[in-house]
Figure 1: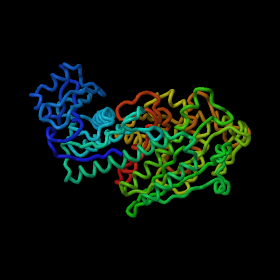
Figure 2 (figure 1 turned 90 degrees about the vertical axis):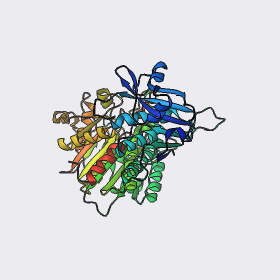
Figure 3 (figure 1 turned 120 degrees about the horizontal axis):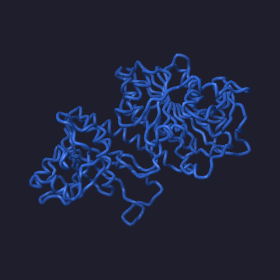
Figure 4 (figure 1 turned 45 degrees about the horizontal axis):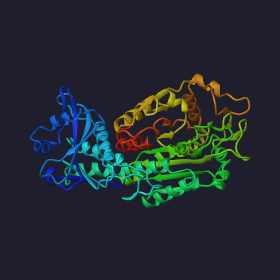
Length: 506
C-alpha cells in the first residue's frame, strides 16, 4: 500500500525520488500553479518558460519531467497538467487536483517516495490530492512477478508526502485519514474485480467479506445454497444453479450507537457471466469477471464507513452467483419463484443480474431502511446511452435521484439521472408468470430499472446505479483510473453515507 503523509518540509531539502508540481494552461502558455513557489524560485522564476520550451502546455493529464535544480535532494521535478487556469478569485477544483495527482502517482511507479507540491488551499484540497495519488498509484500485480529483475512492471509508488499540509491540524489529519480509508477500500474493490474468476467464485468472495468484516467490527451473515433454498431465494438460486460453485447471499451490517438513520446498499455479484444457456457470443466473455463490480463497490463502501466511524447504520447485501450453462442451468422459458413470492418468467438467462438483485432488494426492504441503493453492471443498453465513463441513476423518488447525482458529481464519479417510464412495463408482461425478466429492446436499461422497482418494499426510497460502462476500463489508464477494474460507485456510496450521518441527504 502507498503511504500518505503530510509534510511541512521545504521542497529543496526533502529527500525524495521526485518533486511533483502543478502547471496550468494559461492564455499565453503554461503557468506554474500555487504550491510550487520554492521550486520555481530555484529555476530563477523561469520554470514556466522552461516547461514551455519543453513543449508543456498545462493541459490536463500532461506530464513533463526535468532535472531538479542544483541543491535539491530530489533528482527530478515532475510537472503535471491541471487543465485550464481558474478564473480570478477561483481555485482549482477537487477533481482537477485528484486527476493530476493520479497521473503523477502512476507516472512515478517504481519510486519509493515523491513529494507533491500541488495547490493546497485547505484540508479538502489535501484530501483530494491524497485520494487521487493513492488511487493513481494502484497496480494489480498479484499474478505477476514484480521485482528488479522482472519485466512485468514496477511496484506502485511507495510514499506520497503532501507539501503544504498541516500535520498538526485536525481537519488536515481527518482529510488524510478519510482519503486513506476510502482509497484503500476502493483499491480492494479493484483487486476483487481484477481477480480471475477461477480464483474468485461466490464462496471465495464471501470469505473475503467475512475476513474484512471480522477485522473492522462488522457483523456478517452468509447464506449458502442450503440456506438460500430454505429461505426461498429463487432468483439467486436460479442464476447460480448451473455452476458447480454455488451462490451466496452475504449480509454485512455496520452499526453506530449514535446513528438515527439506516442505509441499505445492494450489489450485483456475478463472479463470472457466461450468459448461461443464452450464451454470450465470442468476444463478449473475456471481461465478464467484472460482473461482480456492484457487489465489490457495496462491500468496499460498508468497510469504509466502518473505518471512518460514520454515525449511520449501513447494511450491505452482496448477491453472489456464477452464471454458467450446464444440464442443471435455468433455461429460457423457466419460471422462478422469487424471495418476494412473485414469479418471474426467464426469457433470457443473460438478464441474470436483475434476478439476483430482486431477491436481495426484497431482503433489504424487510428491514425498512431509510433508503436503498443498488449498484450493478446491469445492461449494455446503459453503455449505449451514456458511454463507458458515465453511469445511470434511476430512482422511485426524484429528489433522492437528484441527491445521489449530486453526491456522485461531488466525488468525481460521472453519472446522469435516467427516467423510469411506466409505459415500458407492458413489455414485461408474461402469460405464464407475474412478470418476465425481459421487455422491449429499446430502453433496455430503463426496463431493467422498472423490473427492479417491482422488488422494492412499499414506501421505501430507492435508487438504482447501472455502472455497466465505467466499472471496467478496457482502454488505457487516465487520471487516477487504471486499466481494468475501476471501483466505480464506492465513493458515491461513501458520500451518501456521510451525508446521511449528518442529516444532509434529502
